[in-house]
Length: 609
Image 1 (cartoon, one colour):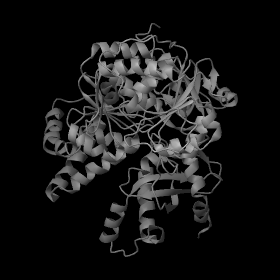
Image 2 (tube, one colour):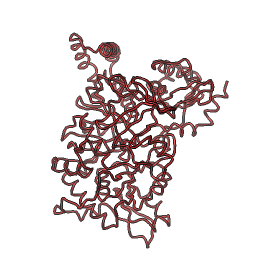
Image 3 (tube, helix red, strand yellow):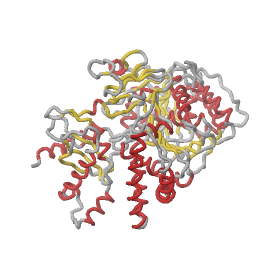
Image 4 (tube, rainbow, N blue to C red):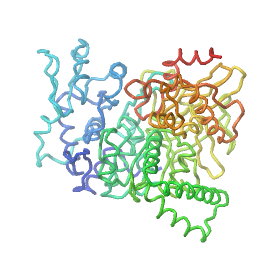
């Protein structure tokens, strides 16, 4: 196929010319505001500076940082010179960052944390071989006193030499089919692997996303995904290519920022959608009892209308006034406590639980789901606003130049439409290989540019993809039954008492779960039921209640089986986070890590009477 963009540099150049004076990047305080023209000037300037620092074609440079307005500029300057950007969020464990730097054979480091700089400067091998270190944090950087190391620079100092006379051009060397990124997988079920992603793959993904999403110039996009994730990066570049202002904020300030700036676009993981649901329900509880009762009745009516429309593919004119009335009098008052009526939420990282999708549809918050992996340079399948309404619970159709095949996990025989199998994807966006890992490459790439995603799913008769679970997440119980735990977890997480959970039971006679409680809901339950025992693992009355509550929700799953139910639970004493290694950078639970972390507690559940 013919490509709109010849490369990432081509995408940047065209966007910066078209949207020259609009704001491209901003922090949440608007202390840093960079126009498209300024961004391109910085890109050209940094390209030349990197050359002066000794950066060469095919060098690998690690970028370890939290989201920042200059992240995309820095990495594009690296790629423009034909070098390769290796990125990770700086919030993860230093051991993993050390592994990524050394495994990727990187020769330079860019980071926003002085602790990371000090860690690497203490290593003799690093000081001897690294070409340069650039600090991009806001604080002054005090690093280890090493007289022989004089190749550390502060980005702010470098940019002081940038003027309006700096040429808006560069002798760029990037090639479309060269490697632009080595993105290390988050390791939900294994050690991180470095996926080598092609330059043309990312520009192709952006080009295809434009066809599904009507992103308007001048609107605001607030970033939640880390820019080290391929999916998060591709959506940033989509908004950049369409002239949006991209605003970066720490997640802890996310809700304050969306309240202040009223963004038109959000890109969220399902975990954030769950948190959003909880905040909207809290807003409901703060309303009068009369309003809460009216809402409950309205929601039931809307649920009936929703099912009728989906089942019979019609929207009777007589129902339209009812929907508009309920929206104006009820739902608008709830959703506007968080979002405006213009906000569109794009959902990635994993498929959204059905109850959550139903909820946001009823309350009038438009959603668009899409699908992809690190290994697909972020995304390969997408819905539009219209198709998400027509084909709920799907993640969309393949990009124009991408092929979906559903195959039998054992025989690799292609499955007919509607049958569950292993999802495989083919296209120019597929990784070239895993860096220095031929065994993993052989397992993942079935044929040239064709990826074994490791996900189970099916394509419905209309051609829309439904993602079910990770193939590796299948639990084989001692009775021989196979259980796809993410499907159960999606239903169980609809409980107001659950913030996070992971279901266990491999080789066991029944299922158990490790749960991170919603402590506010738990305390309210204890008060309401006159329970004085606040330690949840000792509160047998609450345990019994919650297990019954969760199993009722699990039973809503399509084709529910009698053995797909929880018998015992353990309450974790801390949340699953990126910092403690139990969440990926895109907020997906590292299932095996959670099970290993709580191995002793889980084993006790099977020994208790």
